[in-house]
Length: 160
Image 1 (cartoon, one colour):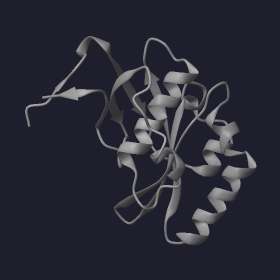
Image 2 (tube, rainbow, N blue to C red; image 1 turned 45 degrees about the horizontal axis):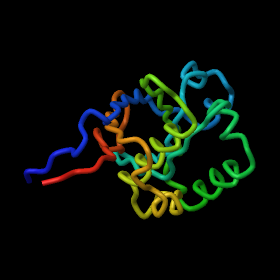
Image 3 (cartoon, rainbow, N blue to C red; image 1 turned 30 degrees about the vertical axis):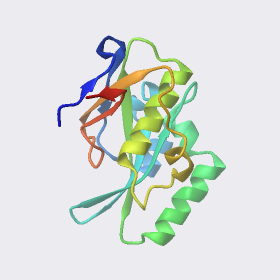
């Protein structure tokens, strides 16, 4: 393709280590060690060997278990269970490795994850139209149990 990043020195590398997927009740119990360090979570549906991505979210100044116990997420979980009765709903937790974990950067990372992994099942529709260049160029590498997310997602200015 021949494209290159316009300002490579401005790209911030981000590594997100994803936990294995846990049952919703296990995460809600607050007993998952990653709950205290994670900033991101993905809600997936597991059926046979297939995994569907339903939602990507973030937290800042609260745990994933606290966020998932809020009314909007309880409603979302119930709706997913009704709409996908043969799927086992699971939660994966993502711990970012990045020098600065500001609210703005965490929000940018979430936007990139949603935008680059969006499909018709994902419930984050309004973030699809909100992803912009912003102040930071980010190169996200997902590690661990990241599937069905892409291994690498990037937000940067490319030139040819």
